[in-house]
Image 1 (spheres, one colour):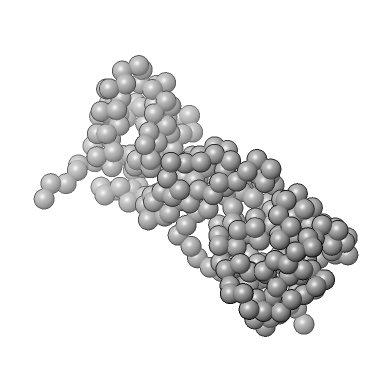
Image 2 (cartoon, helix red, strand yellow; image 1 turned 90 degrees about the vertical axis):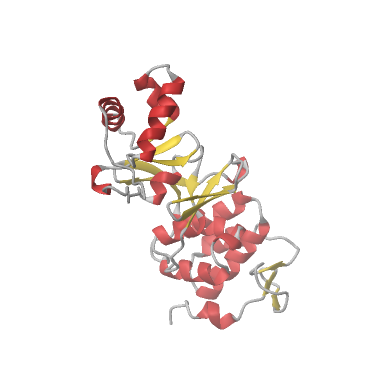
Amino acid sequence: MTRNIRTLGDVGSNLLTELLRRGKRIFALDDAAEIYGNNNSGLRDLLSTLAKRRWLQRIEKGKYLILPFEAGREGEWTEHEFIIASHLIKPYYIGFRSALNHYGYTEQVSRTVFIASTHRKLKSALEISGVTYRFVYMSDRRFFGATEITLDGYRVNISEREKTIVDCLNRLDYCGGVTELAKALSYGRDELDFVKMAEYARRNGNRAVVQRLGYLLETLDVGTEEAITLLRDNISNSYTSLDNLAGPEGRYVERWKVLVNVPENELLQWREP
């Protein structure tokens, strides 16, 4: 069986050295062209050779990850999945279950990274080194509430703690259901800004989010009177299911216009005594 020998010629070495000097461990074809020159065919051949020799990993069309020397002959290496995600679409932020996990609000381990964006990709998901990157389209109105973190020298956008909860209540399928949100609210009770969260829920524009959040805050006995008042002022006259991933059976709570269609003990287990 033929194995790719991990050698690196002068031209390839100069290209990768300069890319790394510029802080581009992940780079696009245009980044390489600035260094290599205008010979597009020659550059593509070079990048293809470097990928075959495991100095580069192609993460999607026209985008590459530089594999360091420590990757060894087989090129067994990858960047932090959030860093890779930050190069796949613009604008973006890491959100939903991925953000919950980052903040320590869930123990669920997922090999999927959820990326919110106002742009659409041709494919809704990519798989890179065993990790699935799922792109979640979001309207301009709902695309707010991101903050910046630093990972291994890279700046990465991620939803704020409060926006993460709101986004998940809007798309429960991307966080594992409302019980995961009850857990998150309980874990974050001492660091979440509940007034900001209530304002974000109102700004989101989906009143089902407002109603779900208000019911959860009161059931778990977290939040503030100001947050509850803000939510109460923005509920709908129509009922919504607490968890749209569950069945239609349950009890109606008029105060929040919510159909509680999950076992209440699953929520109350996260309420402090």
